[in-house]
Length: 124
Image (cartoon, rainbow, N blue to C red):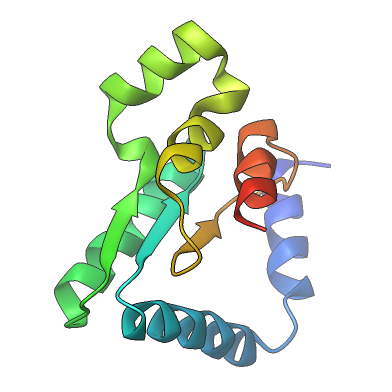
């Protein structure tokens, strides 16, 4: 199946996008109320979406919480990948800072990226 067809299939499979968006917004607002941090992770195009998402939140909302796109710092990403393996780039960063007040938003088009799955696991 071509990328285009997979993309269309994925878009068509999204049930009640507005409801899902509201759930995410409520998690972000709860993190904001706790003055926690929203960490967003993704690879490749999903990293671009992650960075854009954080930028939109910074520009549009007046949030008290910190907003961080973990893959945006290429020096950290490549250093961790070099020393500990690419599959550990997000887990390594989160393991040192994550608290119960924080939220981790994972962006993945495939849902199979080891480093994103590890970020979700440590956040859970």
